[in-house]
Length: 440
Ligand SMILES: *Cc1c(COP(=O)(O)O)cnc(C)c1O
Image (cartoon, rainbow, N blue to C red; front, side):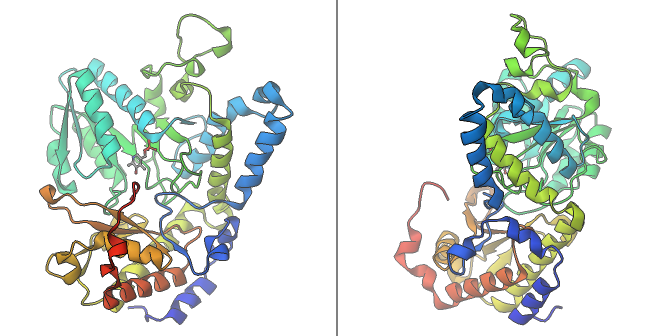
């Protein structure tokens, strides 16, 4: 076991070859004394380059270049160009991935494609398999498509139930690679292979994995993928998302949001839709140029890690950070009723640590997870609360995301010390910490 001292955490930071990457960001601790941000898995930090780049797009490209900038500033090429950059982070090839719309909208497109392909190849397969604890928007989109296509959604309660759910009715296995509530990481290669062996297609949501850990879409046999721009890709609030389709499948289906910029020749203004070849057909309308410029700055912060070992090195640091978090909680918060909800095995954990309170602890009896997260925020530790579901036996969760580009080992140590203080002092019981905002 590692010696648990603040000095030890500082020594780990001093030895960290990725530490300089942190300077790419406008760090809140420069402005707000002692702020520790452990929520990059909900909204990534602001890169230093972003404000100037977006200002340049506004004042120069838009202000001076006006409509000519669609060509001269490469605006029209953004979905493919930024897509190629993201492709290098998720094991996809050039020309295979586009940036467009939101994760929810892209999921609608790729899930429609998967269902349509199965309707041709295996019309009796009419079930989408997913997890009840998947992020709700994924389930809502699937429910809508089930209504339109006369299909069913089959939800499993634990990953162990997935293989048995892949039966002769299953058309698509739709999973989020890292579970947003627990941080549990699926084995993409094994589950894609299991889906294929059962005659199903494998669709992956990379919202909590793109930019957080190495992803190998082609090598691991994925068929479809979507991912989020504002989490680990640091693209800013509401950043555009991305879509990827296995090259062998991409031309088989015309996704249903057949807008003009997914047309083979948009500027022919042909009254009849003809899809562009390849992934370009997954673009619907005009790219949000300002948001795209911000997203590109965010993606560039990850590409900057390439010379220091890339995603593999970032993953090693992420695991060292979450390991330190777990071990420090065990050592320093013993007796406070905290349970580890994330997998303890490194290979099964994404880039976050989720905790819950044992039902028979003081905090557990008081349903204190929300108040504890608020009390921590008041002490400068920004994590988040995710509501449980008593009907499914899921506890309320305290979630702490680490982002290896920015999180330091000493941040982990200090965050756990403040958690210990909030619990040991009973400060979370103050009424002000029970008040709820619209966004939690
Ligand atoms: C964050 C997240 C989304 C976000 O979808 P939006 O369309 O951007 O709101 C979707 N799916 C998962 C699994 C997520 O974690």
